[in-house]
Image 1 (cartoon, rainbow over the protein chains, first blue to last red):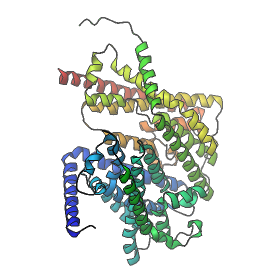
Image 2 (cartoon, rainbow over the protein chains, first blue to last red):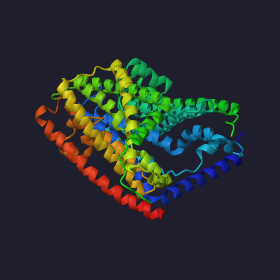
Image 3 (cartoon, rainbow over the protein chains, first blue to last red):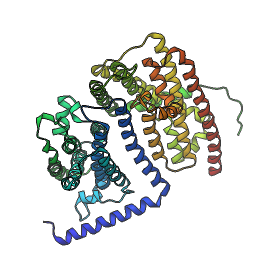
Image 4 (cartoon, chains in turn brown, purple):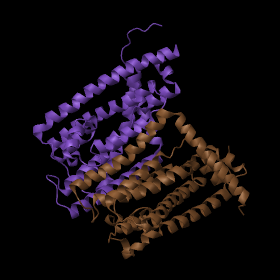
Length: 273
Length: 270
């Protein structure tokens, strides 16, 4: 059982982790600014492409650019949240491969926690940008901002980040069995970043099923956005409120991924370095 | 050291190119990933354009089959144009092994060109299976032979523009330690401003005026618009002349940077 003292110790370590992260990234100022510029270009070019497309073609299955700006915003915040707090998970297969992972196992702190809280050179610039963009997109889309919205949106984006984490942790855990999982991760990331830009209703049945039930990226932004924007084109004739299931799905997915991770860790014997 | 005037021998460079092909072919798994990624993106582009055309008025001169052809050809061109052929230059500058390259009896820039050509040739071969995959999802229009020939020439000019851009970016490693962020920024900008994501003809007029004269348009947009016939025979000379202008400008910059950079290496190593 996790005791109070242990939780306090982990929280202290985690606070230290963020202090080092921010200090290191500010140390290399030019590099930090260039990476921040890249974050702007990465998301900016996606939104710009949507804008130009929907200027010529004002409606995509009944979604306007304003709606899709909001759709992108929901995904962006959830994804940035995941990238900011859990991006180290992606590096696990490489650490296993290089034998560096064994070092994690001999320390008296939970292995996954150590991985997540290993200082890199991380500054929450993407998260800050995502929050600013989301505020703008919310106002621009004209979505009704009431008490329910303010209460539900944080839950939805946290749930979305957990969905991202669950899927990435599952892929990383495969690294215990397979040497190269980068390719798989890259393909799934591509699926995520490109297929979440559009209303899921435009896809064929198989792809909808995939995005809803197998890699449930549709719950990161499509279902919640359809709920908040009162879009009628919900898939599989499910009630609109399904969009509020995101936090539940996120938690379940992370728990499943964690169980898988424990199983992988249990049978891990090192790569023979 | 006696450096007499040696007769130029091309064999070493052919060998560099062959080695590069063999190296790329080793990563068999990456090839499958690349093809899977092509399939995913072809499916996506078809779905997106079909959805847009189903609910809106058709734009001037670009029926659905033309835009699908445009996007599919853009994707296949990307297999070749998105390669960073001179990355080896950056890597060797970074770890310092460039110093030993200068001691070899070869022309260093040419060796990078040969290596890059080999890498690109291998990925050009991938266009064949990628095209077969694409044809499972979409129909790709084939233009008349003369138009296709002009497209090939313009594509080659676009390739040269891309090669020089990459070379210039990799040359910055003579001065900076880290430029991966800059490279990624340029890659992303090329996708958007080259017209790979959305044809430049859809850009707002004010913006289109600017992006049309940038080198990114000379890489992707010009050959693509020739392919789908938006740029007609009356404008061939004009647009390809423009591509040539970019090649001359970028080649000049690349040469100057290379010469200045090489001096720095000598100073550091001396």
